[in-house]
Length: 170
Image (cartoon, rainbow, N blue to C red; front, side, top):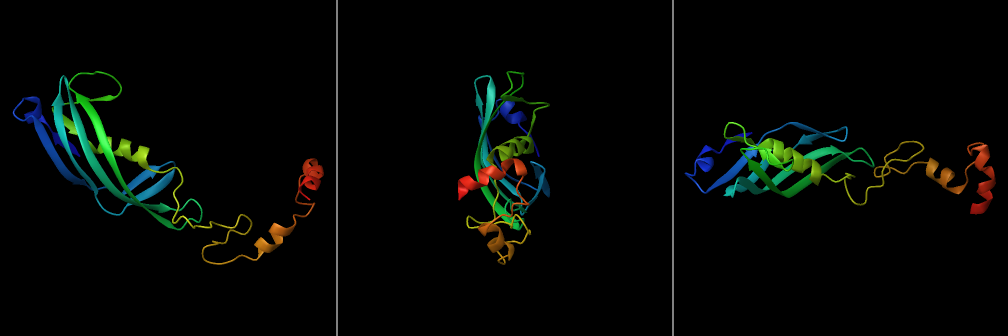
């Protein structure tokens, strides 16, 4: 979403209120496809500060993606602050360049979104995940292999180089 800030650059305004919604369908994060459940809501203000301009605001996003433990749908409600410095001249890596009196709000929102998504996304804190042997979703049903696996692992399944270490756990 492009926002024209010409009035702020010309000095006609000392600050510019920005309240907007950005519509997107999909978002990729760490090879995981996420779906937006609604628009991205941004509410903030842009002010002139010496030789640059500062955008400050709050962003709210609702995303859905597969749970990292059980692969069921997980919903993420994110609310985070955005603070970004802009300039008409190149001032450094942290300062975004204003081109043709326009800023790209979605570019900044996307960067902050990457920073605010947790590394592990789970559907609930009590998620049990999938059985590592049969693949059953342990939130929905109890698998039969868990009793067999927990008790004893057969010596055929153990790498022969590690067989002597088995005696340490008895």
